[in-house]
Length: 198
Image (cartoon, rainbow, N blue to C red):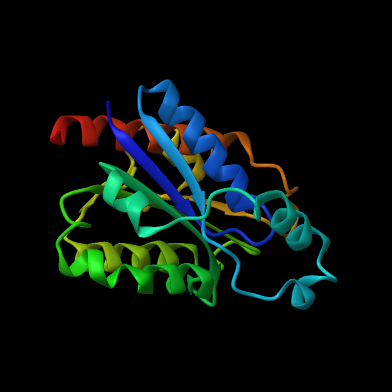
């Protein structure tokens, strides 16, 4: 059974919803799944005026937070982070910076990795955020397994690098059907490829 860790940071809850959808799809594909949020590093007083950020913080703060052990345990990892000026969020980067010991021991290598993201606007740095996550994975010695255009549904969400969601503009906070289908496809693909490598 493939062991999949979904390691993500979410401020306003979109990343949390995406992580939960990935977990359900991966479990349906036969994987053992750990979903772990990256602990918030910003003091809650800073985002007290943002109801969505406060609500997601309250909903996740007592859940198990990601540690390096979760990556060591996993055969495959799906990372998630919102975009911050075309890069992963600082909370995500701070977590990655704790993995130096595991990296030095080669314990992050030879695993399957994929990623997802969200941004306020279309073209809000989604592709560059995913590519920057994959640059980190290259340093790990991981196997990057993007969804590419390996299924016709990817022409609907249009992102061959991973899965992305636009949170603002005319969109609602709900994940679109195209995004949900893309998340399902990526989870199944990651589980399938990790199983073949094992």
